[in-house]
Length: 261
Ligand code: PGA
Image (tube, rainbow, N blue to C red; front, side, top):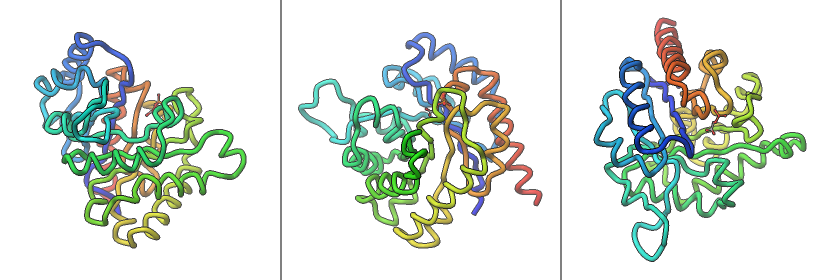
């Protein structure tokens, strides 16, 4: 099941202006080594994507949009489409919990965005996760089930190859309270069973699943050790070049160890 490459995504959220983002990319480019077994993806604010796409060395980093609209063109003031981002980004976050909970993004929009990304040759990173309340009320399974079905229902098994799932418990995002690796192991198993139910055993084995939520260099190794975790989605720690680089190095180390086994 283990994939050759671990995926590390840095979600910069609504931080860094054009100048700062360019400087930060430069700093990262000096620090981060290219490893064949690690794919590093940066998700800066949409404003900076175009200029960073000219600056970035695609062997070292890929780019991701944090969000986009699902229609290709038209009367949608203020929106940016996957079609417009085509060729500028290689990945796109879809349904991040901040989009779902602050901007009330629905499963219908999420599924349209997953389809729009694929239509435009952008790999969607479909984010799913339960809130603290849902967790306390034993609803994790149902919530993830609904978000998976909701997000993937337009997607064929061939297209599923392009999709990456990010499990991000909402209660663990941004507040330093990261999820217990044993719990994440169970949830990842559950996600794979759901995918098996929808698309069959081969798809369940090959789909890439990331964990996200308050990951730091200290906690990263425990997640890489989880069978079935193919990488991490990093918020806060991705804005600290040293911390982000340490996580990348840990990803490389964990891939090298898996290969030795
Ligand atoms: P965090 O954010 O690492 O700061 O918790 C993760 C995310 O929102 O993707």
